[in-house]
Image (cartoon, rainbow, N blue to C red; front, side, top):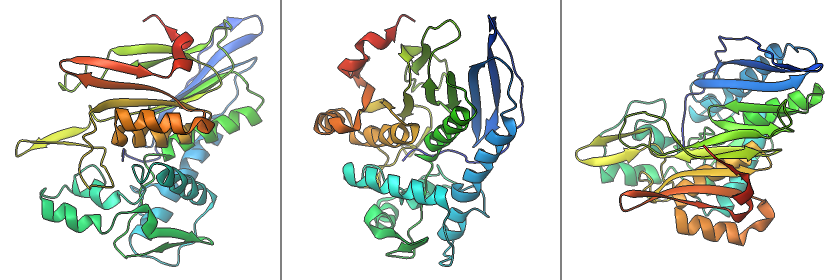
Length: 335
């Protein structure tokens, strides 16, 4: 599962405008959930969205941040059985369980013990060995946890939860709902690379988004494998090429296969998923990275009802290859 910091700390706000007639492009941005975020929107006047956006980040942080010791999820993970969950937790739990069942556990919110053991969570990294992984696997499995009313029930006490592979996408959806309620129908929202758009840009051209070329050399030089038009859709990317380390000659990446307990080695370098909502795109991007190219393609063919599109980047010999959904063909832009 993909992990990331989840700390609410918005520190920057400004607005810029580019006018056409009586409309203008405005931007508000900042830092939260351990990453940057921005909202671009088109409106006649600047709207002070910061307080409401700030409250969304705080609400989600209070519910499912594993980095906040006072959050609901932290209390549950520490063994408190009296915690009653809120609507944020409940939605993410049920949506996650649904994706877990559909992907046969490739996506699993109980992966937290393994994430911490590999050093990609909030705990110190443990010395890797097969015995440790096998022991922790008894604490992992989406079937081992349920929600009875407003309380989490765990099959074994060592089960711990981690929503970081879906919560950022959910945050984008919540901000989208805020903008629509404010009467804003042209916008682009981005939180840590998860994106959702509505309508078109000021010039009536589509919003454009880039898919980063995987770089496993640690050079951190960003380039883009593809640039696409994105209208009224959400997009999320998951990959194993930035957060990794080597220990005793072995490669460990931050996306863990919950079914095996090992760092995912599917051969898929990145998975970008397009969906109607960003929480869905976020969760399936992680699942497909675990599942790999062939299994992901099979899944997409078997589930047309989900309306998912993908760009999957993988390595073939020394070259990068790309698979993309046929429906995306006319969305590609020159870069």
